[in-house]
Length: 345
Ligand code: KG4
Ligand code: ZN
Image (cartoon, rainbow, N blue to C red; front, side, top):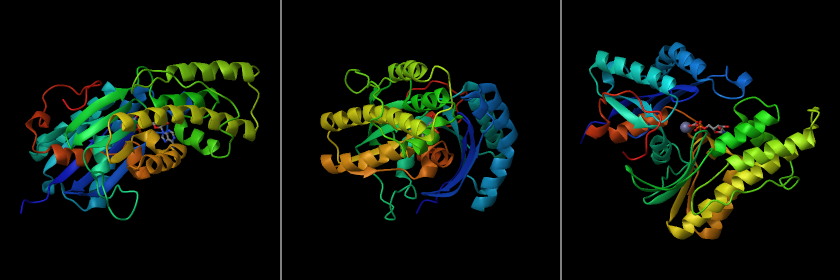
C-alpha cells in the first residue's frame, strides 16, 4: 500500500493568514489568523495584508505543526496558494513556501485558490452530516467568494468546466458594499447575514440583474442600493435596529435570489445528481436554507461545506496540494504567483 502523503498548506491570497497539515485524507490541523486591521477601511488594504502575512506566518506555522503533531521532516510537500489573489499577499506566501521547500528539500505544490475551495468539498471531514459523505462526479458547484462568483461543473478532481461567472463584481463584494454603505465594518457578509435574520426581506425591493445564460452581475445591484440609501437616509441619521435588519434582509434577498436563479437554470441545463456550494458566501444562512428547499424540489443531493471550510482556510490548500502532488505542471513552478489564473490550467 502507498504511504499516506503528509502535506503542509499555506494560504495568503487575501486577508487570512492560514497554515494547515493534511495527512492523506484527513486534515490534522487547520489554523487561521484573520487580519482585523482592514475593518476600519471598509475593505482589504493590500499593503497591510502583505505585511501582516509576513509578520504572522511563522507563528501560524508553529501553531499548525504543534496542533497536528507533525514534524517538518515528516512532510512530503509544501502546498501554497499560487493564485488568484492579491499579488503582494500571494508573494509572501509563495516566498515562504519556497523557502521551506528548499530548506526541507521537499517539493513545492502550486495550488489554485478557487479549485481548492471546490476540492475542499471532497475532504470527508468537511461534511454537513456525520456520514462523511462527499459529492460524486460530475457535480455542480456554485463558488461564491469575495473575488469570484462562478458556476462550475466538476467532472473530476482536476476537471473544472466553467459554466458561468460574474461579468463584474462578486457576490461577496455586493455583501461587503451593503455593509459599508450601512456603516458596518468589513467583512460585511457575516454582519449582513446576522441582521437579515431579524428583518423583512420584502421591506424594500432591489433589482435582480438580467444577464444572459449562467453569468451573474452584481454591479447594478450595488449602485441601486447606494442610490436608494442616499434617498432613504440623506442625513445619515442612525438607523433603528428594525430599519437596519430590514435593509440587510432586503439586500440579502436580492443577492441570494440572483445566485439561486442561475443555479436552478444550471441544474436544468446540466442535469446532475449532486450540487454543492463553496467560498465565503456559502456561509450565508439564507442561501443555505433556500438551497435545502431547491435540492428537494429539483431532486438533487446538496453538499454544504462546514463553516471552517467556507471562508479562506489552508485545510483546502493542503488538501488540494495532496491531490496535485503527482502532477508535474503544479510542482516547483518557477515564476511569480498569479493574481489572475484560469481554473484547470
Ligand atoms: O472565500 P473568502 O473567505 O475569500 C475570498 O476568496 O474572497 O470569501 C470572503 C467573502 C467576503 O466578501 C465576506 O463578506 C463573504 O465572503 N462572507 C459572507 C458570509 N461570510 C463571509 N457573505 C454572506 N454571508 C455570510 N455569512
Ligand atoms: Zn477564497
